Structure formats: C-alpha cells, structure tokens
Image (cartoon, rainbow, N blue to C red; front, side):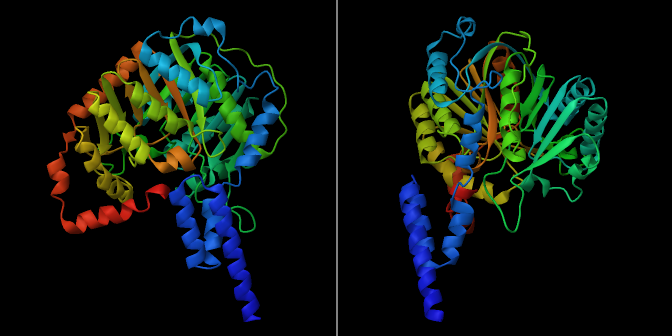
Length: 472
C-alpha cells in the first residue's frame, strides 16, 4: 500500500512538473516549480496548483467575449475619429498611444476632466457626496473596505442610496476583507445593496493567495467616477498627527467619457464574481467635461498581454527628458531595471520616490537589494519620510501620466487585477509634477555609497528577501 502511495505521489509530481515545463513562459519560474515538485513529492505539486496556476484566465476571458457584442461594453474598439482629432501630436505621446492601442482593450478618448484628491480629507467627502446625490447607479469596488468610522459612513450612504431606488453594487476582495475583523459587508445583509466577494476562500473550492482584485473603482450614474490607490479606511485620514498608522495617498475624480470605461471594468469583475448573465442596457452618455485624453487599462492574469509591464517599458523608452516614478512598493524585474538604466544612460533624468519606512518591511528589504543597480547608472532615488506614502504615479516628460492602483512590483504587474488610467493632459500632468517635485523636496536622496555601506547582516537579509521577488 505504501509503495502504491509513493508511486502515485511521484507520478503526480512528474505530471505537475511537466505541466510547469509546458505552461510557464519564464524559464526561472518553470525551473523553480519543477525543482519544487521533484524535491518535495506531492507537497510541491500541491503548492504548484495552489499558487502557480492561473485557473481563472479562461473563465474571465469567456465572460469578456460574451459581452463584446453589447453596445455598452467598450472593449476591443478603435478610437473614434472625433477623439483622434484631439490626440496630442508630440513624438513621445504618439509612441505611447501606438503602444497602448496595441496592448490594451479600450480606446483613448477625449473630453475628460481629472481632479487629483489628496488623502482621505479630500477624497472621501467627494466620494460620499457623489454617492449621496446618485440617482440611478453606484458601482463600488475596493480592495480594502474596513468597518471603521470611514467605512461605516460609506456603508450608511450606500444603504440610503439603495433604499431610494438606486442600483448599488459593492465588490470587495476576499483577502482585502481580512484587514478588518468587523466586515463592513455584514452591514449590507438584509438591505437592498448588492454585495459580492472576489475569489472568496473556500475549503472545497478556491484558496487563492495571489490573483487578488486590487482595483479601486467608484462609478456614480455613469457621470462621475473615482479611482487611484486609496482604499476605504480611517488610515487615509492624515491630519491627525497622533495617529501613527496614517497613510498618505492620492485618488482621482474623473468626469467625461472615461466614466464608461471604469463602469465596464467594474461590470467585468461583477459578472465574473456574481455569475450573472449580462443584459444590454442603454446608458446615458457622459458629457464632455474637459480636454484630457484618457484610457482605462484593466490589467491582470486574465489579460492577453502583461499590458502595464509593456506600457512601463514603452514609457521609459519614449521619455525625452524626465521620468518621475512614485510608488510604495518597488521591485522591478530585469527588463524594467534595464529600461530604467537605459533611459538614464540616454541622458533622461530618472527620479524615483520610495517610502523610507515601509508597511511591508520584507518588500523594502528586497527593494534595497536592487537599488545599487540603478544608482550605478545615475538614477536619482529618494526616501520619503513617514508617514507611509502609498501614492502611485508615473510621469513622463510634461505630457503623460499613468495613475491608478498598480505598484512597480510583480504582484501588481503580473499576479493581481489592477486598474489604471493613462492621461494625456498638460494641466493634469503639470499639477502632478508639482506634487511630485514638492514631495521630492521633502525627501532624502540616497547614494550608492550609502547602500554599499550597509552592514553584512543587512545585505544578507536584503539579498535573501530578493530571492522571493517574483511573489512579493
């Protein structure tokens, strides 16, 4: 009996190793999983099927295809002629537009207004006001939706809106719910709010550590929308300096045709989670609100391309004079490191703002092990002082901004579901450059000498954490 069991484990492990060999595009990932499967028979194979396989790609792509014939789902459509007339004409912008047209599923559209909202003090009142005045629909997706004071305010407004006949749908991530002992979703039981969980943990079904929905989307009446890096929680209220856990962040209010793309992104996730059949619906078209050209970018393991990775590489290659990157988690892969160094060697000034004290220390340690490669090629790296800065920005020259939920790390660019918006608008980019430059002035630039002087125990710690960068 024992012999048969061992034989079955080895057959299972060899079969799993073969699957990794055939399906993994990255040779390092394939090698790692093959070694794991064969070194730990049975257990290694189970880990592979739990962590190493994207089992939802097919289902999600099928749902997307089901909606492509619906006139309200703006995917795989070319830009409209009236939008093209307003596209920026510079070589930098044209190159980025061409790239994004090739790797994303939505067209660049004109007529939008982007309003940056700094921290919870600006973002939450604007979001709550939009919810309180909604007449037709409210679609909210948040990675973390805590049941704290801010979370309760949102829950109260959502319930009130549903009671007056508004179609209210709330989507939260199952892993993000673990941040709160008191789940705000429980408030919606017995109300008219439709609430759902993205990839819930079940003993007999799925238990995904990766493939989390990290998107932050709020769409109200298809007329105004919000996205960025901010979750719904008290920690984004930063005025109270006595709160040691406060988090600095930036969110955005979007008006104009771009709202339809945020709505479509939410609906894709909603129908994936709820399993509802899509029905055609005629939405009132958002009015022209400004001069910004924008495109919503859904990124995740279900997409045909690693679009945010490719856009980052393309943006770095297109830059003429300046690249500004602000991110809380910075673990670039080899291609991204090479692209940053190539930009710096071309004479582009590359500036990267990172938090000095990270809320995930092991991520910061892994990042430390990579910084010397950039500092050697004259990239300028700055550490921002506490409180923890969770803001995410990519700014190219004075023409282009990429805003949204994604960080510069493998989890965001390869493992999670993210939503970003690319913006071509001189006014918006100028304001974000001003915000970036002000933040840089408050930060401390680090040097190659400083990184080289780290003690041996610290360098060993950082290098050890670097081994796990594909999954951090």
